[in-house]
Image (spheres, rainbow, N blue to C red):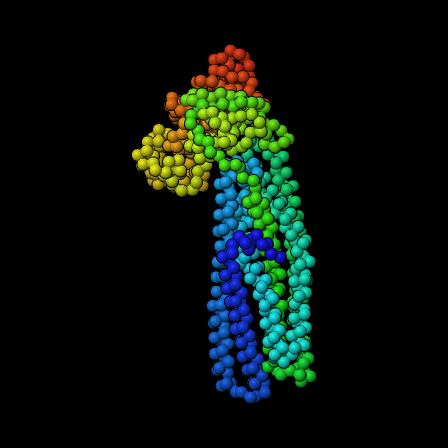
Amino acid sequence: MFDKRLTQLCPESKKYIVGNIILQWLELALNTVMIIAVAQSVSKLYYKDWGMSDLKLPIIIIAATIIIRFFTAQGANRMSYLASKTVKQKMRELIYGKLLKLGSKYREQVSTAELVQESVEGVDQLESYFGLYVPQFFYAFIAPITLFFLFGFGGSWATATVLLVCVPLMPGTIMMVQKIAKKLLSKYWGQYTQLGSAFLENLQGMTTLKTYQADEFKNKKMNEESEHFRFVTMKVLTMQLNSIIIMDFFAYGGAALGILMATRAFVKGNLALANCIFMILLSAEFFLPMRRLGSYFHVAMNGMAASDKIFKFLKLDEPAPKTEVCTSDDIQLDNVHFAYDDSREILHGISMKIPEKSFVGIVGESGCGKSTVASLLMGRNTINSGTLTIGGKNTADVTEESLMKTLTYISHNSTFFKGTVRENLLLAKPNATENELWSVLDRCALSAFLKSENGLDTVLLENAGNLSGGQKQRLALARAILHDSPIYIFDEATSNIDIESEEVILSEIRKLAKNKTIIMISHRLANVSEADSIYCLESGAIAESGTHAELLKKGGTYARLWKTQAELENYGKGAKA
């Protein structure tokens, strides 16, 4: 019922847990004092030992206990918050630290969606475990023992003994449910993270799915996975409701038994009226702490199931420390093979040579492996065989910091964070001056637009949702120029944008090509026609390479694609005319 890994993870939470237990016990003691005052008052009024004027002291005692109980309850809630706050902070620090150690290749071992679910909702589930379940576990055993002695010294050891014997029936029920619950909740979290991963993947690839008319197929698959998740969720709820019914039976049945025994003892004359009222009012308190523990148990088990996933992530093998740094900018791929999984190889022995300060184009039909090459260059995936070097250094041995300083990647869907334009630009160069920021914005034809807004303090929505596609890409280019790295990779950077933005971006790429190494991945061949060399990929292999003129003369794959695109563009112009 406890996960030692969690308690060892945050030993500082123990003092808050202990504080929570003490405050709950004080609350019970105050409740007992209040009920004693009530019982004594009712008894004396019944036997006419008191008048209405004698009720002042009991009323003061009851009012005082209610006020003090309010503060003890607030204190217990505060302790719960502090205990859970510590573990949530610690767990998220561990996840973040592990993510940094795994580097950009973390996606080879865990999906982004699963990691987000674990670090957000999974960690939140631990709040109930530390803040509610653990303190309640100890209090649920302390409270009945305290009441046992109160009932015993109150005049009925028999009633106290029967109630105390009935209490362990409830944790027995919890332990019987535990094995079923653990297995079921593990399955629930597995299905939950799988559904989240599938949803994120389909959402990010919506354009591709629409292009290949595969959205209907994915829709059916998502519906099947959602139905399976619903079925698992219903099984979890059924298990929880069934166990709650059993616990309620023992809780309220035991309380009823205690009331019956106390009443019977009073009728027989073996128990005073005040003591009988005291036991009747407190009989439920024997079982309510354990009943509350049963409710928290299901929430805690959910948190423990989530923690299993988190600890599994924290135990992932980390890459060996890297020490090499890039000293020059020439890139070479030699017989590189790569597959995302064992079922299908994506790249089949790719070999490329990209000299320093050259302009190289990589073209081919969709799905031929162009973006995969960029991913390998950026160190986001590990090649299966072959070698990939930058400046003669194997990228597998180059530090991620050096790799990030050497290469800048601009895709068709660059990421922006919610904040100002200034904040998003400073990610590329934190010490950049205001003049530098305006300079790159001017180069990318954005300065006039931003000056008409709020300048560098113009607020961007999440992922720059308040900018047009062309403005967003030009801002991505401005940030890339500010980064000022030796190598730039443009991966379909001009797709799905307006003609004016495309011309601005292509003009800046030509300027960068004069003193930077440029790798341009594009489905539109006209964009790379001025490149020093072009690699044409087909089905994960290099079909041919050479300059634009050389490839057209060969009459191969490149020439066929060029002819097809030219016909489509001319057809569009003719239809418009």
